[in-house]
Amino acid sequence: MRHTSETIELQFINYCKGWYQETDLIKDIAVFQGEWSGCDPEHLKGSDVMWFVNMVWTKYTERPMDVHELMMNAFKRKSMWEPVKDLKLGFEDFIAVMMSEIRYFHKGNKIKEWIRPDPSFLPLNLEHTLEKWDGLTEQKGNG
Image (tube, rainbow, N blue to C red):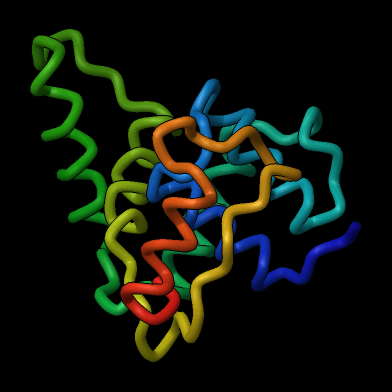
């Protein structure tokens, strides 16, 4: 079944919020981007995935982050775990920073309604069952 671009983007936001199991960051995101673009996820690489994450982030954010802020946040995040002299930043570091921002997106001007996580994309996170989703959306008025 072909999903709309907006549905795929919102499902990716659900991924950032932890509703799907995370196994391999680049391959996981490539599933969403592949569905979005019609491209085989196996042919997508880190730079392609970073473009997709940035596109979703830019489209739905209420607070844009400039490139300097993105780079500094990636540096700070990684330097907590590695000595600065050995520090190397890659696509996954920048993607992780953008995903940490996306995780806190909320309903508002740019996101009208949340959509239920769909296990046809990736396996759902076992801590986040669909029953839990249904309970949250009933309490909060759809997310």
